[in-house]
Picture 1 (cartoon, rainbow, N blue to C red):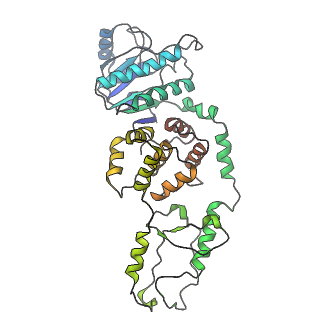
Picture 2: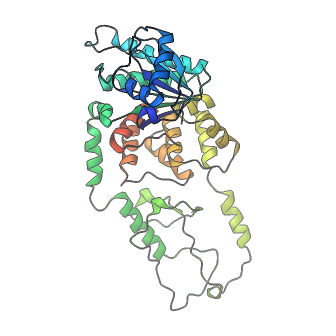
Picture 3: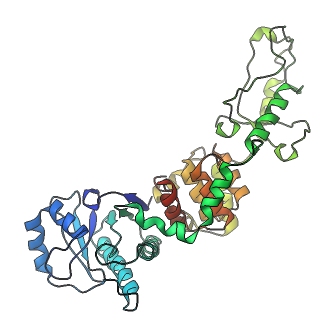
Length: 389
């Protein structure tokens, strides 16, 4: 993923460039600045910093990284927070822009940022995070680079709780749904279908020891099935909204059970295969065409690596991860039903017991389609993101 939010000590992150919130003068400050000097090699780094000289807020410059697991350290000067009336926001934005410009000039493939000015300089973390996301996402729309936003604690991510207070209520409502949930209704319907008389392609004589119905078991979960599907026309029952059910379980009986011949079976199977639905790849690119978007627009908006997107386009049967499918659905601004359909074609489902999936559902229902904003909400609530697809 081009933009990743991670929790770590930035001096321990592996990247081509590490961004340091430096002191404006040739001196070592507290917090991130001190941690980077100690990890890189105090005397060597200070000598290189002295060659740069004094810097102004919003500026950036680079030195070698010495003992860090990186090639370069990009030093940038963040502003001290004074209530927001002294161009602090514009200065922080400049820190990100100038640092990314240097990383690009140095041909870096990856760069790691701290949340600039939020330590001893007192910049509000929620505002700093919004500025960082805006500047980084704008840069990545025209550049190929992996950018890490490294946070040392979770406090920075109270932004989702402030901006979207009803997420918690939504998740709790889902957790206390009555027993007859959609999953239980679907399970009951599957049991009804299993015990009904279906028009099978082969006739067979049932011995006395063959059960009259199929016990799906308490642990059976149709949403979790990912095997090959066989679409069948099913009899009408009391759950019309579940009429279109795909089977993933193949029930095979010993050859002795069959009294009919295999004549005509190949033809029937061929007819079934011809009627198969569009693949994930076919549906994805159909949606891209329908939305009038270009390939780069889609994979950049989805925060998906270009190489991964090329693999999906070139391999008809390639199935990406569930997170990648969700990222594409968000980039294409699909509604919930369309997202569920796209997931299903890749063999996945939104699980009602998953807090991660519930947040995705909530964001889509509220038409929140900014992938980075969604990742902030996910990171705050689940310590996961759609990164790492």
